[in-house]
Length: 198
Image (cartoon, rainbow, N blue to C red; front, top):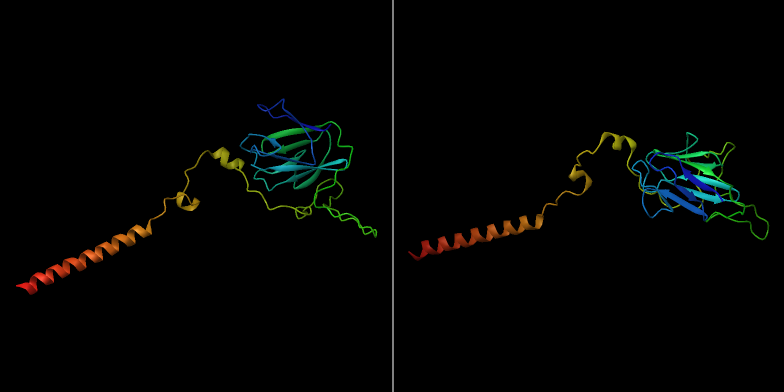
């Protein structure tokens, strides 16, 4: 069975068996393979087992996905090659899957013999163009923290730009304005009443 072996120091020794048709890899725990490392995006990439091949698809990660040092958006990874996400390196070991597994959302041939629609076109060399997208692709997943942001350290947040600033309470200002006008009218009526009584 195919597996990913972590090569990065501090995370070394971990092994992840590739079970299933789709394996998501990222920093968050809702991924199939969770790698709690800041340079890895929350949902960094996914592996799609397609026939005898394992396809790596970058999920618009901040720090990119690489196979043997080459940046990829869609590519086939082979045993012995190194997959890098941010600062984490993993090597694919073992045999690639023997049984074909259809890609979800891929069109199949009809009874009349219509040609099959390829869910993803991968040119020779294993790296697909950035514009290639598999059928049925979901919306992009938010990006993680960039390596340059991590290296520069924490920076103070501008709360007004992030949307987390304290909202101004416009309704309380309106209430105070109405109270002031009503008070002024009452004081004016009382003063007018005192003047006319004399």
